[in-house]
Image 1 (cartoon, rainbow, N blue to C red):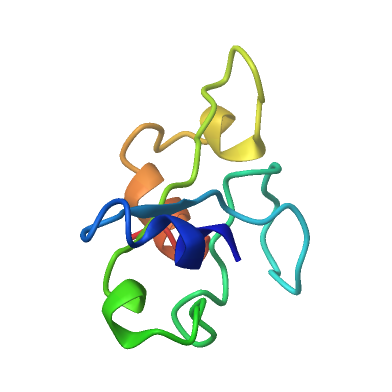
Image 2 (cartoon, helix red, strand yellow; image 1 turned 30 degrees about the vertical axis):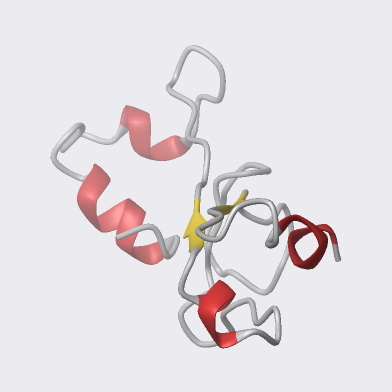
Length: 90
């Protein structure tokens, strides 16, 4: 794993992980924007000190790129906190 090889070069590496594109989420999402399940099944790189350096970094698109149904909801933008919670982002 590259992080193990790089750790002697940088004693405090950050491991940035993009979100998944497909899993068992009951909610619609786009590739890179879904962390559903990461709270129950976090990434484990088998080195405790490195596990503490993991940063989950989903990328989120607005309605100009990915016009998801919740952008057209009557409660938009107030509904986004709940949408993020369902997708594992909050």
